[in-house]
Length: 150
Image (cartoon, rainbow, N blue to C red; front, side):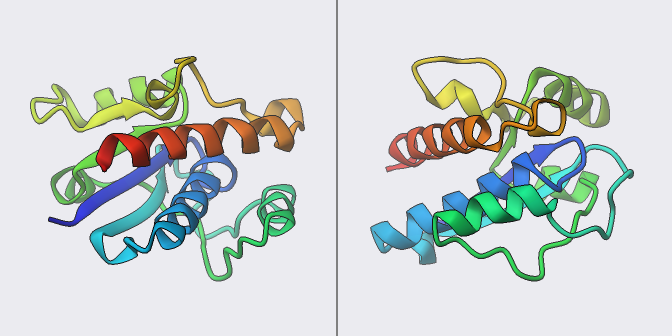
């Protein structure tokens, strides 16, 4: 069975692409990348077509993770049907997803930090400028998600 995961944040230029590429690295390190389809998207239209925000790209690069070619895209109804797990970075995006999709009857939508010992929101570097805190949250959340899926 292939796990299909979509990470979601507001603009798809910071947190959700960081989660996408961190998760891709983690499954690659485990040698199970063939069992995963991993992507990211936005709830808004504000950044569509834009590349990953430079400080987010630099933070990934610090850890040897590339993200070349990734541009922001908005989530669609087809995504809800295609992906097994739709993982929001914070409560605002969770609320937006529920507005977009109505009742989550298939129980696909969750928060990334729900897979950790400290549920809540992934720190938003757009407002804080603290990409290190975001990195730590994303890494912890992705590790917890991978453990959950093993």
